[in-house]
Image 1 (cartoon, rainbow, N blue to C red):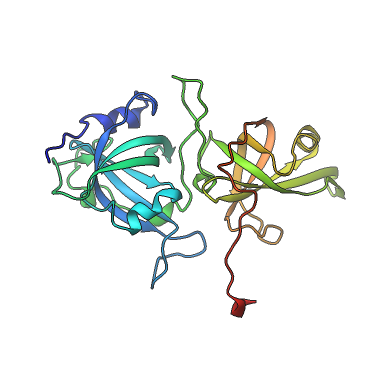
Image 2: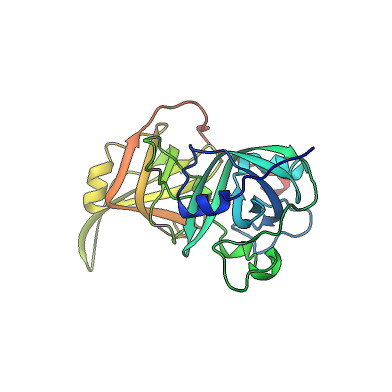
Length: 285
């Protein structure tokens, strides 16, 4: 089967000249690796990684990408592997430390595997760009949580990212999630004076969970708006390391909302479960 990669797609997508709604590029997987979970530094033994990282090529340039967890089965079944030719159906682009990275939400595998097409170089190109492995190290463990910026000026459609993709390096993001629990508004007094705080937990359709905390005027602004079981778009907050002494969720980060944050109710299409259940062996009780 003869296939034509979408030449120029990597450069156009990485520079923001194309929006996800504009084109469905055909690209080749030239590298595929498991990303260690948030609670481990390496994938070892028989443990399956929680996320998979790809290097995608258009024959001219290549770029990093991460597969949304609901597509992990495509990798585990080897439907998608190194050499596969895929067509991206839904995706977004984020910038981590000024380097673009794609989050692949949905894709089709056109060819299961074939020889590498072209001689792709790292994008943006550098004077010493050579092969994918030599010119562009693959430190997948550097960014255990990564995701796309919620930016789409070409269309009013909201593009949201998986909770697991949030990280402190992001400046702009939007998530769509269900409120699974909400704490009462607590008033306190410390060396800085009187204050108030409340927190709530979120769950998205990818199974990602994260805690959100609001202080003082922000707590007053959002406390009555947040309802358990409802689904919201949430954006413009600070992503910071989780306080594990007070946060039981399996996420190394949490969100702190501020006076620029927005919370908007959205239609509940049933794609987000109402609770996240973890399988526990009886012997582990």
